[in-house]
Length: 479
Image (cartoon, rainbow, N blue to C red; front, side, top):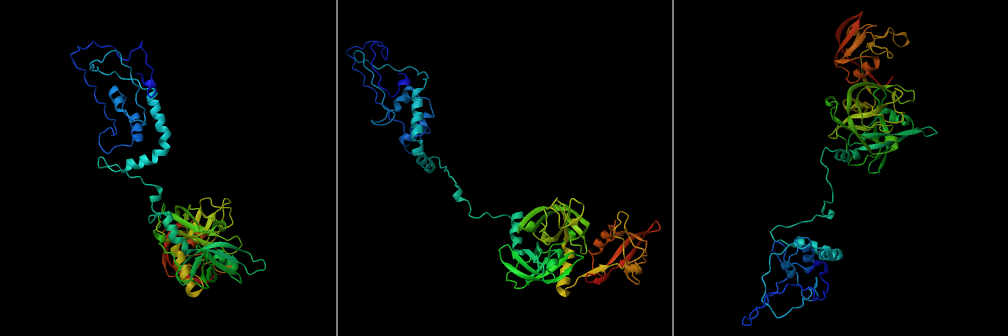
């Protein structure tokens, strides 16, 4: 019987018997009883486990083994089942003894296979979930299957300590956006950043952030939780570009940021900058330490005094509004105060269009000393060598000028430089082991020290190099 007509009634054809006639059997031989039909297979191919649902077995069988005459008989199902029973084959002549079947040749499946696949496809949508659940519950071989859905994932994702997200989440509550307005009729001002220095409510920032509001203006600090507090200036240091504010009604639970050690920073260390670039509060950017001891002279663009720093250079994105914000290391400790950026025009300051990957921060060791002095006395203290140097020449060192301001001596009588034997015209080429190429570089290096420090100086006089040691003096307040 061809499998192309499987499941359909096949009319008898006398001219085409379904089986060749067999030799007659002697009358004395009773007819052999017909073999009992085999039971329909309902188990998986491995023969183990509970009885399968008929529909599931039909789909399974259609994709497993090719059908033979024996397996076709095994597919017989009770009335009303699927597939329908095979058609009856008309008898020809008297009953004959059964002839043992020969080896079955492979049979070509076409229509029957297609019918089974189509039937399985039609019911897949309705029984797919049930079959999946039934298959997952089976444990024929002691092996269970578990499906995890997205609903089983943890409610909160924990970020490991040291990741940028973890460091930022911990530091952001201790960083505030500063709004400064002048006391003039126009109420001009700007936006900057500061960070919590202690639980008493002291905020450290840049001087140029608060300078416009220092005399009769208003200041406020807004934190990442949206709460804002009025503030006042405790002290300012123009030369260092550092200022300290104090919240007027400091809340309980302020989170001071931990201070790191900027002397131990290495080129290539990771950095994280937090600030309010162009007024966008709580902005976090990342980069590395690109260089150390970078001499920088910066101004606020208002014509005021320049500030000098032996800066940490970073490629973390820093823009106007980041000024005064913390530069953090990978552990979340403050290593610098973001203060200046390089402009495409070649100057340092705060009025540039945006970051070009050259940002500069005041080392926190220096800023910490200044902040402590401002909190204690309200005035900055600067270390000095007691000599006036040329500020316009660079490349050959810092030359001590021939005359000081207003025609006075360029070397303060009985001052640190005079006691060290320095004279007008001497060119200082080294200070504390760092090369000096200009006046601003010398000042930047001097201000990394404290009054009273002894520092070795290398200088040239009449073409000859010499060394001496200077004990730094001090100057109080901005001149």
